Length: 84
Image (tube, rainbow, N blue to C red; front, top):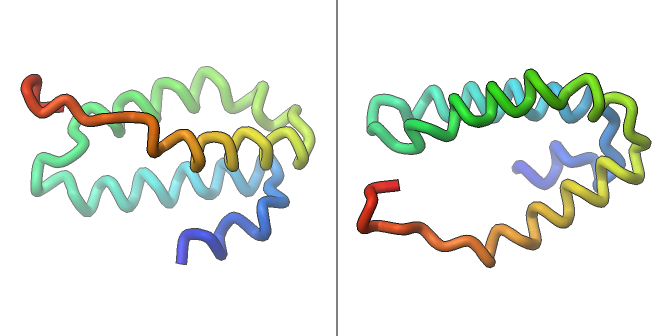
């Protein structure tokens, strides 16, 4: 379902903003479980600071960064010792 929202990786700045809003709504569903407590705050701060610049990027650039982020997700590990 999420892959369909990426429109074949032809994403505009407005599409990115819509994905951000949908991601925040999805995180809100999980707040009751205390999952991802700091992620929502981080996303809000980052997107508020960076969204004007992101909207100036071309669709190709946004798509490149999106695909890179999706592929890099597997390199990150969760540190269970700190509860994050």
